[in-house]
Amino acid sequence: MTAEHATAANLWNAPYAATPVDGHVEIPGSKSIMARELILSALGATPSRLRGPLRSRDSLLMRDAICALGAHVDESGAGWLVTPGTANGDVTIDCGLSGTVMRFAPALAALSTGAFTFDGDEHARTRPMSILLDGLRKAGVDVADDGRGTLPFTVHGTGAVPGGVVDIDASASSQFVTGLLLSARRFERGITVRHFGTTLPSLPHILMTVEALRRRGAQVDTSTAEQWSVAPGTLDGIDLLIEPDLSNAAPFLAAALVTEGTVTIPHWPAMTTQPGDALRGVLAQFGADVTLTDESLTVKGNNLVGVDLDLSATGELAPVIAAICLFASGPSRLRGIGHIRGHETDRLRALADEFNSLGGDVRETPDGLEITPKPLHSGVFSTYSDHRMAHAGAVIGLGVDGIAVQNIETTAKTMPQFATLWTQLVTGNILDTPAVSEMAR
Ligand SMILES: O=C(O)C1=C[C@@H](OP(=O)(O)O)[C@@H](O)[C@H](O)C1
Ligand SMILES: C=C(OP(=O)(O)O)C(=O)O
Image 1 (cartoon, rainbow, N blue to C red):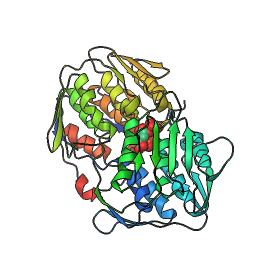
Image 2 (cartoon, helix red, strand yellow):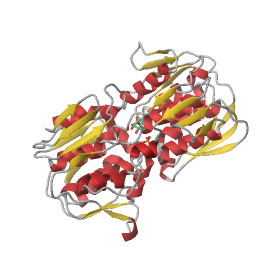
Image 3 (tube, rainbow, N blue to C red):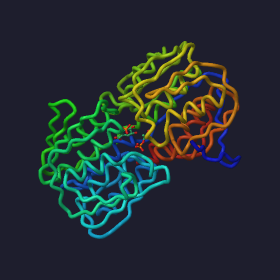
Image 4 (cartoon, rainbow, N blue to C red):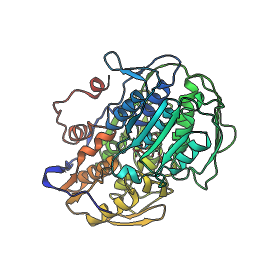
């Protein structure tokens, strides 16, 4: 693996916490809910208002994608007002490094008329796509690629998709399932997606898709395991407040564990399909005190112990959880996450390489990591354009003086305010930036 070259100019000195970190952090909106709601709003029978919208690289790319495909987004009032529409003409859609854009927007494109070419960052061209492209073809969509089954590819939209039964192996990504379900309400026969692989990662994200469809009046049959049917019909326009991104709360809550401090996240939903909600149970297994009230989640760090966790449902939490393990009193094992090798980077490889370069004892397994805590030393932490690697580097910096995280700006993928919020929490200094609530609304 080639780490991006670290220069003094793109190194961020992660704040070291000499004392316990105490504070609260307001987390911006959920990347995953935002992505779904933008696609569904573009397909709605009437406009939708998305309040507390996330403004990050991924959500802006998704906004631009639906606009290129004929929708209109008005940001001048409260939240984002999305007016549905379709396109007629040829355009290129930039997916950046966003799995949600590259997997969710192609089916929407098939409902417009024209040649829609999807491309993205250099690394995005290595992320798994062929299963989705084949799934779209089985649903009757004309997709042209160069035979590698990755970005770039072109959807030749005719404005209509037959749909029907589509069998796929979604063991590499749940996003293949979501990408087929989200637009299926507008397919002539709807869709039935059947998963036939041995494993199915990120199940909460599929439930999130089902819930988002049902909220807009769609009938979704989930009565058979690993099978989802969306009946054809319309989608209601809605007025929705986007929940905070609970997976992005992970590094801040980790600060409580690593420094034996107390961190509160306001607006933690009482009921949610977000996989980040699993942090409540996970952090308790590390020994933390976890309290959920009507309004917030509070985590207090305590005698951090090692864990043995199957993270298959919550793979996007793995980098931060792995960083916490470095500070536990005993070894940890993280399992069920072979698929995160296909995320923003090969996360298992990247985590093992970076942790070991700081003196760690971390072993990669085919589907996870074995982590034996050891004293770590200062050094550069490379991030491979991966926002969650940057979060992991920041967490290590709390407990190890002299960690320089390379390209902290990569956190803009889902949370452009990360470095500001982090420094505020760890140092207690209020920095000169608008509150998240102001930026979001
Ligand atoms: O549907 C979604 O919004 C997501 C699904 C998951 O993808 P995988 O199933 O590929 O892990 C998750 O890791 C990603 O961050 C977001
Ligand atoms: C895997 C992730 O992103 P993406 O939506 O690009 O797949 C992630 O955010 O951890």
